[in-house]
Image (cartoon, rainbow, N blue to C red):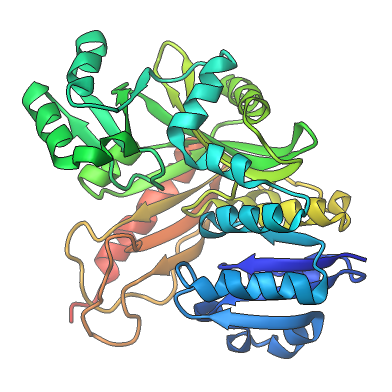
Length: 406
């Protein structure tokens, strides 16, 4: 029997550890209060499965999460700590180090978090990466641009998503950026700007090999979304696309080059430059967007479940991927047009699932839409990439046409 401490920021209907993990394990849950157990219809069943539950407001930044974890590890003699949210990976790793528990260490988590450390390791392993340099002093950007040309990108070394990325077009802009950062300039690295198609590979890595993978292509790059929040789609590559094999091979090589734990979910981004595929960044966690619901619909596989089962020896072999359709994908649109009003509650279009919107569905009030929120998102399956894209774009048009003005 293992005593398993779970740090959870996900909705419990999509993070059903109480169903997934072997019944002989004792489970302990540190949960985000906005995902509270008692909000679930099956709350009694969930509570019966966990020996202890604590829920926290301001979960991402609340120091009481780690303080409670420490107390429980001592009190209950916890054996295993599992965590899959990007906000939990590092603090779970630090807890393992502090108490000598197996699993991802802090040095491993930090190598995945710090883009400079990551790229140096990939470079050392001989993997293809975008040209980059650390930023240490004024003039570094201009000297780098003299070698690779403008534009160049300045990226926070420990940023998430596309936050804080700046495209720099010339020497005056480079000098102004360096001056604005002052002593914090070394918190950034610079990359050559490389026109590309954005690809990514998601899966679960166990004992040196990927036990499940899927490969996607994005209709936009993350820089496009930062500069102008446009609708974007991610659709799996067609089964006969030769890039699949290349990307999966590069993904496994990337995971082997980094200090990867014995079991991890992963999300790795690649650039198809037209002359080759290069590694951009890797994460030892579940990817964001609507990756999870798309994989559940397309393959019947949940990456959190698969990784958690492997990490706790809870019958991972019982999860057998299936192919529900040749391709699957999702569309995300942000609040790019100041859209306000009453949104439809359900999408009636064929092939669409997991339709969600942040607009109110039953009142004409003005929605308070954060820049990080999706105006609309949805998942579609299709016979090929073209049909999947058509269905997603039809959902977007239907949504805009269906809004009732406040």
